[in-house]
Image 1 (cartoon, helix red, strand yellow):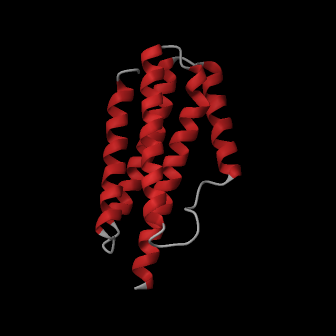
Image 2: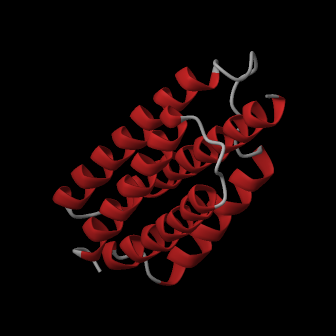
Length: 147
């Protein structure tokens, strides 16, 4: 029984990290976006991550008394610096969309790996995971419009 709890907790931790990274990325680049429609799209994307993050936190209490794991400060700083460096030469909305797509694709890959290799997931955790992947896939389609 403990193994099943650990697996579900670990999946929720990974999803929480993904949501936090998505929110951080959008927060870091939002001021650089020039197109008002694209800015609104990113604000909506941020809200989707935030809503998913809240669902994860709520479900997490079924498996742990602690808060879900987030990315550490060093990783956040490194990611922000890499994004800043990549946007130094080209900070167009197209480049921003490209960077967001790359990060989102990493989230899809991680989500699919979790889904494909976790046979002991509780139904609600599996549903959250599937919705996370679908949210990420939809985001990629949206970002394509801004390339």
